[in-house]
Image 1 (cartoon, rainbow, N blue to C red):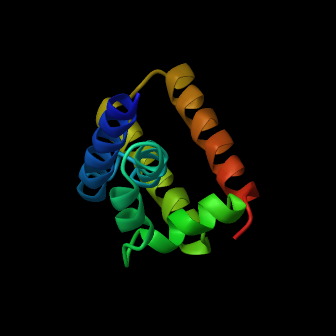
Image 2: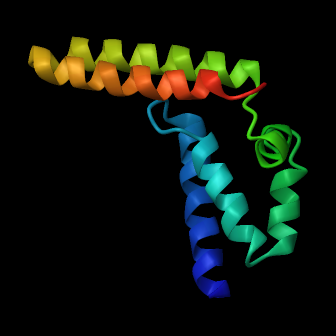
Length: 117
């Protein structure tokens, strides 16, 4: 099982790092998943992620209180709004598809904003 958890952690870390550069791929959920996988397979990599100067504080806050920092909440809201505008502008989706995507993003955003800071 250690190999399975390590593979999960490594794949999630890779996707999280790609998400740093691709605006529509979220970083934080993948890093949370990476910490989960590494906590069960590689204490050294878990410790590295939790002590990382950029990603560590948010991961520690999530682990301790299921908290999302205000800056991350704002970034996610702005990112989702931009993503919805890009979807609308480039794809010109049917109104029902646009409404479904907007509803999904609204629900996700509401959940994010309901977390403590």
